[in-house]
Length: 475
View 1 (spheres, one colour):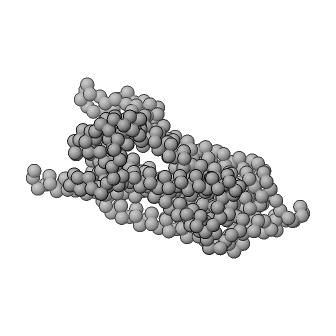
View 2: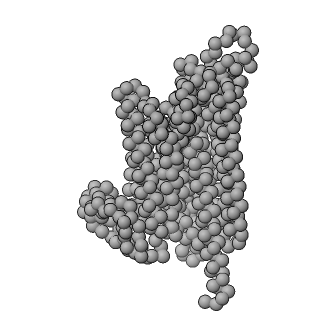
View 3: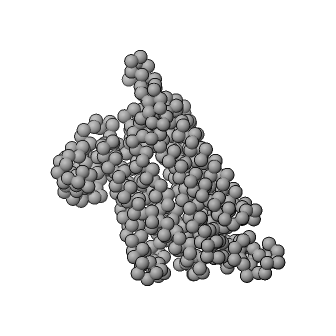
């Protein structure tokens, strides 16, 4: 290989690494915000409906404040989501150029529901003064539905990358062109059902526990008013309901991965050789091809996967080393996700048991400390799960169809783009933090208290500004 070819290969390798980091950073940032875009409207609906049904001013106040917070989160999420859409074309023209007709419909439908969600969020925010109470409440329903459907369509693209379908490659003319395109078959690929069923409760788990965490921190700081207790309770309940569903659908997703992506499954289980009675490996890393610091439970992987302790599970030895993912990253990220998920499940079960036995959730400082930690822990579990999904597919961008290195753009400057995006996203993240903190500070000072409709101690002839100021106590 001549010097020019060596330099070209080195440049392409650096370009590929930068593009991977750029995509990973963008997705890792956006996925957190997308959870609130999907799940938060349903949480707002619960407290808003409670406020109307029970004449509860605190619940209405909570709904109004959460609506404002949701709008800020949605605005930042819209920016990061738009950046991701552009990155798909800019960074991976090999994929989009060849398979754009296959997966383009799902992107288009996701965009439609994104805009519908944005429209109804605006209607909800400004509908406090202009809409009848029940109509205003029901504007949250299309927001929630749009979030769910948008999630399905974008996950159908990721599912397609894991199990490509809905096309053929023209092998007869030896052109490599994509023919017989069926975008609906591509959308309803073999992976989309399990990925969607696993991701949807994840959005509720993250949104619920993060919201509960915020109010738990407030309670630990001495803000023991009813509004804070309600916020913590609704947040915990949302996460607690989602976690068992998450665990069950996670089992379904793992079984699908084992059958359709055996190399990824072997990396998840750190199974180096095809084995009958495959053990379950807890912890551990591969060092120079040797498994170190691991605890093995004999036959458990075979038992969990096939309900047969002696079934054969394909190992990494069945795949050339060049087509294997980075095993340590995939294995440890999966174990981190499962470990946190099981701890959150234990917390959900304990809280549910206490609620059943005593009629209320725990209110000790120890409980609120646990809830405060549950929010960040759920985010870590989310990121770990997506790391498992995406890194476990490497080196393929579309499983067994196209390698990542064949999809990446040949253009230079991706490293500079990565630095620029990091600066911009850091600024967006800090801005989001400061805006939410400023809103919280105003609420603590008693500004923006009350709601334009709902229970109010003032007589009917009072004017609207007085009615707003005389609303629920600040939380």
